[in-house]
Amino acid sequence: MTGFGEDWLNDGLDVPGVDSGLWVSGVDYIAAWREAHEAADRLNRALLGMGFELSAVRAVASTDEGGRGVVRLAGWPGAVERLAGLLEARTGGDGGAA
Image (cartoon, rainbow, N blue to C red; front, side, top):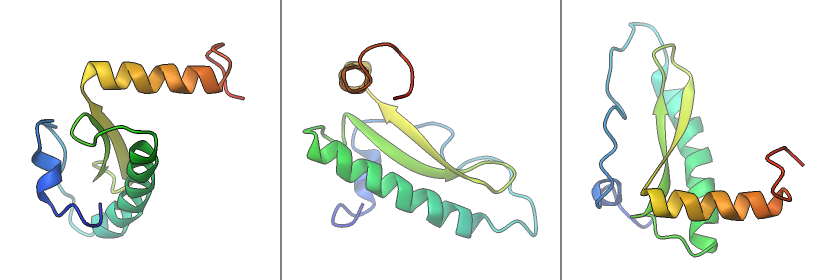
């Protein structure tokens, strides 16, 4: 995220597998990663606005082996449980989309 530098990615949540794997020649991973990065940045700003610390839960941009952008949620179980509770309350707790 803007203002956090690159060190915030390594602030206690080890995210194995992110940005690793085989790259295929000719696939534009950069454009897909940029799109994922923008989405992750938006989600991280929302998490911050809800009182979460990015050292506890955050969105991480990546790409898959086919060159598609991917946003992964990485977090400590307690923070993810709290986020799930907030989302469940928003959907009425029925587990379905509103």
